[in-house]
Length: 68
Image (cartoon, rainbow, N blue to C red; front, top):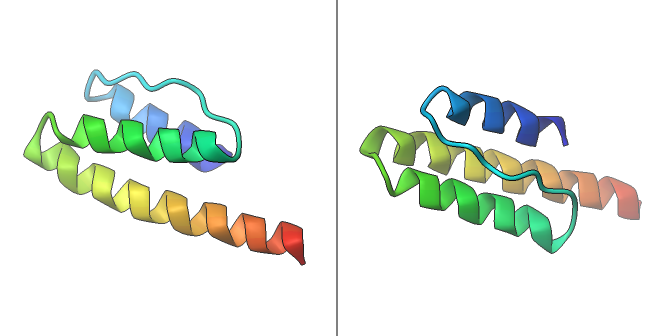
């Protein structure tokens, strides 16, 4: 998903490297990585929380479209 690539790029500027994620439960693993990154710094916590919400919403919308 392009959003995951964008998130990884933003976090690289903070020195955080995230692993690639594809679909399904691995998307939750991506959000778990974001949460862990947010635990390292209060500013990153705000950024990670926003990305987690956006990622979950977009993944659900994509799944709904696929089902339709």
